[in-house]
Image (cartoon, rainbow, N blue to C red; front, side, top):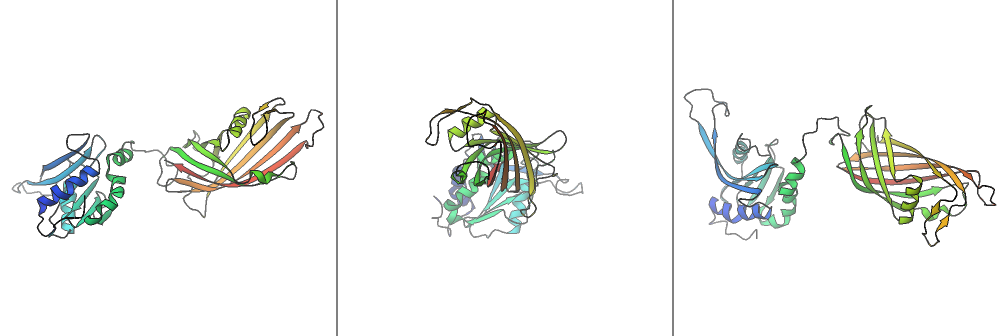
Length: 347
């Protein structure tokens, strides 16, 4: 579709109809739809808009070649030039004036001359956000779609302006945990029987929930875990685990890997004698022959990088076990520690 043109004979009109309009269609815009294309919109510039003060100064006007709008989210414009004319700073300023016009209010603007394409942000007219050779348009189309397609515009501009105190630099005041995972790298215990190394490498999926500030200003993260095996999910549900609440006293979550933020969680688990344990890992379902209490303390240390919160964690489980007089090889008190790492996607 792109890259095989007779640029020598091509004029500005050819650029608009042979290159730009197919590109707009490929990006998801068509005339008369919600992702609409407005063509050759005339724009009038008042004296005050241009900084003119004389009453005798003539009112000026210009014409935007294309205005792409995804109602009601955002607009961006396209300005065409002939292949014989290299793109210049004057062209960028012209396109900027159209995009910044009160009747347009675009966020991006594009320049195309048949040989080269450039995209600018309205707030940074001095340097292109992205530029490419037109012959490579097919290759860079996914990149252009990532910020110019209707879906990308809706994602970027559908949320209202967030004036709350941000969770971290570059993030909003309230975040959703989209996903992620935690991996248990090592388990250690001097008290509990059995080979705990069989649990090393165990992975749990993080499927929610979010991060926000509490009434006293502390940052609180609620984390919903899903285990790699349904047995663990059933056990966690039975003892009241699954969603963990972490808090930090830091004012903002760190974006510096050298100075990470510490989150802590503490929860008490009570498992009564006679509780049903579902089958799993090669063993049949069973009834818990003892009762136990466990205080679970977790420290998570991490930092924000883009839309990811990454770091390491340590867990400390302190058990009080009641065998009810049964001759079982279990201590009255036991401790198990674990280490691991995590990677969460937030938005």
